[in-house]
Figure 1: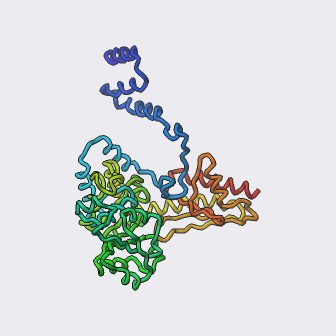
Figure 2: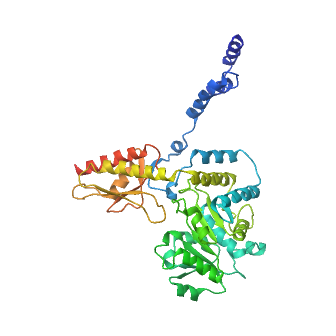
Figure 3: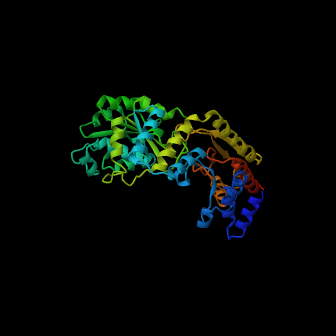
Length: 415
């Protein structure tokens, strides 16, 4: 003890900061275990509040996995994988090999890769279909001389993200019926694009789309970006026979928002990889995926497959009811819980009321929530007739805060 006292006395005589002093204590046998929590606490106190210093206001996410709202947060095991990767150097292609092999094993696909989101997957996947592994064709994109150049899709399946497909230089040709597709197929047809969320809207359903692609020897690509849960969807569409399938990494999978998964035929995944980073003279070189996204995306998929999805559903329904029961304390307010049929297939809460009793519109409530403290973002599905919440991306305790704020706003409007 005298030795310890003399060491401490000498150290106190220096100009150490509190943080350095606590770090020193962690190095002393028998004291380190006690001092380590103190050192961690000091680091947390000293941590920079980045958003505050930048003047950016965080909010409670009562909307859902919308890109503009930064989608999901990564769970601890995914953040740990990201930080682990950040501290090491590896050969990027070897890491993509290993991660892709593990993802393919988990998802029941021939091959897989991590991409720069589902939109990035649309570009690299289409590029792979067009070029194969031909280096000259890879260098020429989006100039399609000597390549097929038409992508078929249903008119009801057109969506903003097909720009990622068109960026390769192809022309998208719209059809609506099987007979129209049969007439449109030609020697210039490169791919058949399917938007999974539009399956109920199109005349040609998913399994028929796959059958027609196989009949004509044309690769089929299914964009399932926001289509987990249910967890079964992760393997459903490659089993169905789609040649390429993509999911967003930062939505239901709760991986990095800058990442996604592309899976499917081995030859097409190989070609897709040759059309992007780290290969320099490629159309998707700027759609870089680094070691952090690769490893974190893998861990996100592993974690998602192990989750108790039934428990998740019970918790989401509980959050809906907590907010609904508070809102129903205001006269004329009615609630309903609904599930979007395919994309974002999770419980959403809808609130409606008699405008002659509660004299505020749902859009005005949404605006007041966003402007308050804490700020709360309601779902973009909110309309002039219904206030909507997507509860699945809330943090513990958020539902109670949303419930109180909604009730207070509605009560004031009904007074």
